[in-house]
Length: 102
Image (tube, helix red, strand yellow):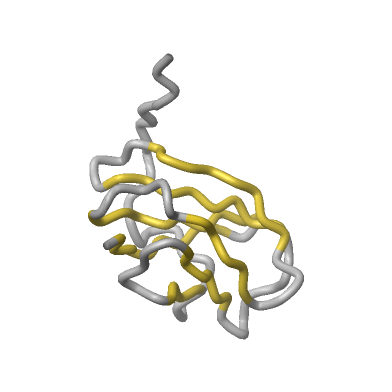
């Protein structure tokens, strides 16, 4: 059974940012098994939808994460090596960072 799904989006990278400053960082990057999402100090602690998309915009993973601290780890051990986009969505907007998986 094929569980992959193609998602066509109408958003452009970098247009709807959570703030003018970088809203989150990823580490380590490149990553292998886990990647940590670190919210910037100006971002409120709340629920965020975390999406992982391939470079063609195909949705690979989506999960709602409650940030009670400034960081949260995401398991990426099932991702193949390559480049991906990590998209963070909240009530106040969206932000995207590139992630390299080795």
